[in-house]
Image (cartoon, chains in turn red, orange):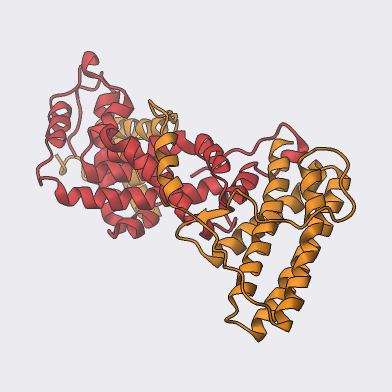
Length: 194
Length: 220
């Protein structure tokens, strides 16, 4: 949830340069919007990859920027553009996930795979990096872990966005961390189940 | 397992400092005698801390061409009307709009072609490059664009040559007066298509002028 770091190479640039490009983009300047895209695409893409998975992250990222272009007229500069864009991205990705979730089978094989690996203890050669492990989390636990531990949202905000109770958000976060810890602690053979 | 570790489901809340004081104290008493839970607390904290250090990654390919293709089709041109026979109030409004020629001097100055032209050069004709705004936006989007551009120009006016700023401000004042007069005339005759078209054109000229100035700021 951090705002883009303002350029500080010159006192004249104390105001984030985004402001100029945002104003130009609002007036229809696609080149200015491209500069905004290049400044923020890595953050949006990383969010999309973590929440949607690598298969659909590129398309979802494009959807976010197209939506941002369509909604630019409603951006009034009350928050940093990066903050506004990030909130828009989260909302869009959550709605896409909800739509996709309805299309998925109830049984997610990735969940079993991660559970099995966790339950038998982890050997060093099976340890995976955190990004990969996040990608293998069950959908519900993954999105809450991404929003809370990576993006810095509060449980109350997550609950509002997802329409779930705060306690549910906390429980899913704990579940995600418990699954992830075994993949980051290859020496942990005395793991305790949740 | 939970009998031996009654706090297991609450350890993340403990790591995040979200437990009420009485529960936190009870859990800490348990931790004093439970090595497993102490280890789990350490691991959960490590997962959380590591998550906060994950770096963002660029997409494996440039996604902009696909975005550009989609938003290019989503742009629209501000509407411009046809020419109509003028009534006296319309003539008055049109005369006011002619003052906009002052913007021509500012436009030359903003191109960086040399000394700003002090006087009228030519009537500003509708330009070939249409002013586009997002398809879903309307007058509110125009107002927001003008507001944002105005804020940028105010905050960064020291990046522009003083002579350019002077010409720019004078031209914008002139355009604003022309817009106000056209709006007054339209208030008298709200269905007049000619006035509507000229008002739209004048508003577009204002936007283009501000965009050029903002582009200069961006390049400075």
